Amino acid sequence: MKRLFRLKGEEKMLGGVAAGLAEYLDIDVTIVRVLFAIGFFSPFPVVITYLILWIVMPSKERLELAA
Image (tube, rainbow, N blue to C red; front, side, top):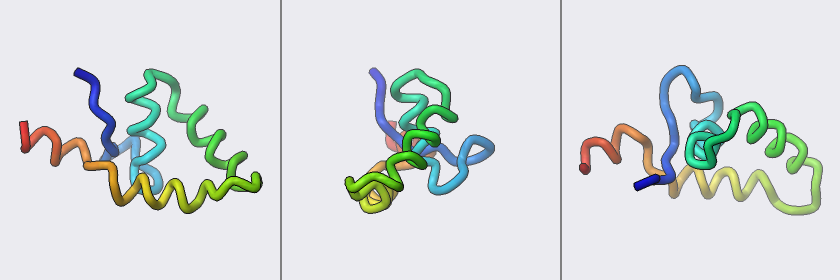
């Protein structure tokens, strides 16, 4: 079963949110990061969404310990 989580380690840049979303969606992490960067200049509050995801999404290590 696929789970949404943040990645820590080499793939992490700022909280690991984009890397976790890329892994969940099975796409390149660069695409997700570019979309977040473009969204920064849109009227939609992407920064707030990113911060909420950073707080809400569990880290991969925490999910592995719970399993």
